[in-house]
Amino acid sequence: MINDICMIDSKVLRNLGNINDIKPLNNIQGKKKFYGLESCSHGGIYSTKNYLKVKIDFSSNINPLGISRKVLKEITKNIKQISHVYPDSNCNLLKKSIAEYVEHGIDKEWISVGNGATEIIHNFVRAVSLSNSIIISPTFCEYELASKRCKMKIDYIPLSKKFQIQTDRVIEKSKKNFNSLIFICNPNNPTGLVNTQQIEKILSSIDHSKTILLIDESFIEFLNDIEKESLISKIKEYDNLAIVRSMTKSYGLAGLRLGYLVANPNLIRKLKPFQIAWSVNGIAQVAGITALKDQDHVSRTKKIIHRERNYMYKKINNKGNHVNALRSDVNFFLIKLKNINSITYQKILLNFHGIFVRDCSTFRGMSTDYIRVAVRTHKDNVILLKAIHDINNNLNKSKIFKNK
Ligand SMILES: Cc1ncc(COP(=O)(O)O)c(C=O)c1O
Image 1 (cartoon, rainbow, N blue to C red):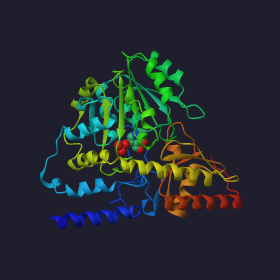
Image 2: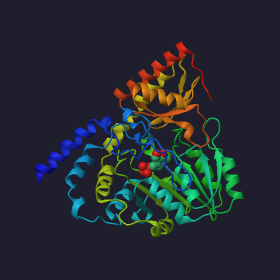
Image 3: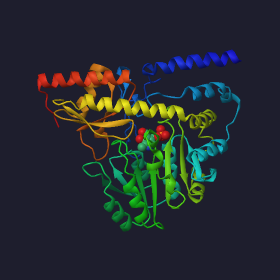
Image 4: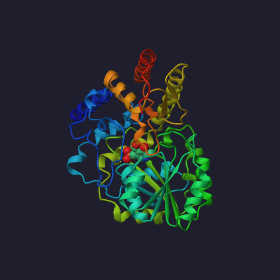
C-alpha cells in the first residue's frame, strides 16, 4: 500500500512539474458557455477552442509555484479515502483551520466553505435575497451572473480612469437603492489593485439596515501586507459585511476547488439552505487544512511574484514598445496596447508563440485596449517577454494599426 502511495506521489509530481503539457480532456470547452441567462467569460485554457495550441497559460491567475509539496503529499496519503469515506458535510475541521488562520477571535460559526469562491458567491446572492445589486466594474463577471440569476436590478459603477473606486457614487447609489448588495473585489480582477481605504469609507457610510457588502478577497494572499489590506479585521464590527476568499489561486488548488466565506453567524446560517451536501469533497478538505498550515509556500510565492513582476515591468515598459504594463499589487497585471487591439494581440500570441493571455474586452466596461497576464515563473516570463518583443518588432516593421 505504501508503495502504491509513493508511486502516485512521484507520478503526480512529475506531471505537475510539466504543467504546461496538461490539456483539456475533451472537446466540449472552447464553445461559448451559456448559463441560461448570459455568458460569463473566464480565462484558462478551456476558454479557447484552440487549446491545443496553448503551451503556456498566462490567462489564469494561479500561484506560479502551483500546489505546495506538503499539500500534495497529504493528498496522496489520503487518496484512498475517495473510494470509501464520505467526507464531513459540515467540514468542521476545515472551518476550524480557517477560523484559526483568519484570527481576530473568529470561530467556525463565522465560516462557510464551498466548491471554490464562485459557488459561495452564487449561494450568498440567493441566500441574502435582496432586490438590487451594485457592481463596481470592470470586475469578476460572476457577480453579474449571480445577480441576474436572482433577477436583481443591477447598477454598474465604473472605476475611475486610474481604476480607483468612485466611493461617493457607490454610497449615493446605495442610499437611493434600498436593499442593495454591493460587490467589491479587493484586490480587483482584472486591474490587480487594492482599494481598501475606499472600501472602508463605503463601509462606514452605507445604511447598515438596508445594504450588504460582499468583499471578494480572492487575491489578497498575494499582497505583502494582508493584515493591513484585508477587511477581516472589521468583520465583528459590521453585521452586514461578508468576505469571500478563494483557495484555488493562492494555494494552487484550481482543479480541486475550494473557497470560504467569513461573515456574521446570522448571515452564515442564511446560506445553509442553499448549500449542497459534500460540495467540498474530502480531498479538498484535507488539502485546505494542510495548505493553510504551509505558509512558507505562500511566502516563497510572494517573493517570486514581487521579483518577477518588477522584472516584467522593466522589460515591457521600454520606450518604443507598443505596450505598457500597468502597476498591480498582485500576481497579474494589465497591459495597455497601442496600435493593435486585444483580440488580434491574443490571437498572435497564441498562434505564433503558443502563449494564451486574457483579452480584456470580455470584461464589462473594458475596451479592446487591454490584455491581462499572470506573473509566472522566470522561465515562462522570459518566453512571454520575448514574444512581446517579437510582436513589437513586427509592428514596427509592418505598421499594422489597430482595427477597431
Ligand atoms: C475575483 C475572483 N473571485 C473568485 C474567483 C473564482 O474563484 P474560485 O476558483 O475559488 O471559484 C475568481 C476567478 O478568476 C476571481 O477572479
